[in-house]
Amino acid sequence: ETGVTQSPTHLIKTRGQQVTLRCSSQSGHNTVSWYQQALGQGPQFIFQYYREEENGRGNFPPRFSGLQFPNYSSELNVNALELDDSALYLCASSLEAGNSPLHFGNGTRLTVT
Amino acid sequence: ILNVEQSPQSLHVQEGDSTNFTCSFPSSNFYALHWYRWETAKSPEALFVMTLNGDEKKKGRISATLNTKEGYSYLYIKGSQPEDSATYLCASSGGSYIPTFGRGTSLIVHP
Image 1 (cartoon, rainbow over the protein chains, first blue to last red):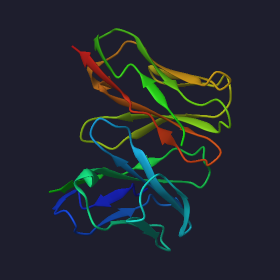
Image 2: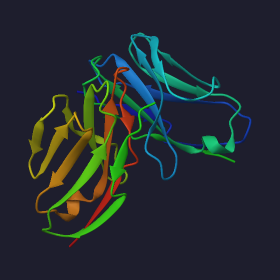
Image 3: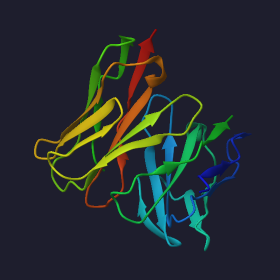
């Protein structure tokens, strides 16, 4: 069974730039959730995709957008980067039921300067 | 947006001690409660998902209980070992079925 993989592992961007983070879900999982973890905080929910449709969104501005592909892999795009976007971005895949455990990748560490 | 609280924020114990931490969540419109262990340089790993009031789950030396009526869950570790050092996260999902996380409890077990 292939686990959740995220790329890149870390990157540095300048304020105002755009970034795309990628996630491959675990085989058999059709739901992908993205979380942002800033220093000292718990993971904050960004959005969830189920079978290529957005299935829920947290309190993040529209410059955070995403996609899910037919193979259930996913992208998180962030436009007009701000310094506060510096964080660890976690992707998690799961089965569709809300009581299924989340399977996390190792995360992408984004630094905005 | 659900308000999930965890306490304590951090905990230092000696090897062999038993310990427990708390997760508080809104009791209304409850769906599921998750516990995860997050070791340094690794990804969070699911420990338990509980849905029913009174649920108790066990995995080796780690166990958890759930009280959905009063909105809390306890995680217990019996005979802590240095390899238990990690951040323990809980997450509650309500009507949206999407887990909302607390800030976690950082556990350090000293040899």
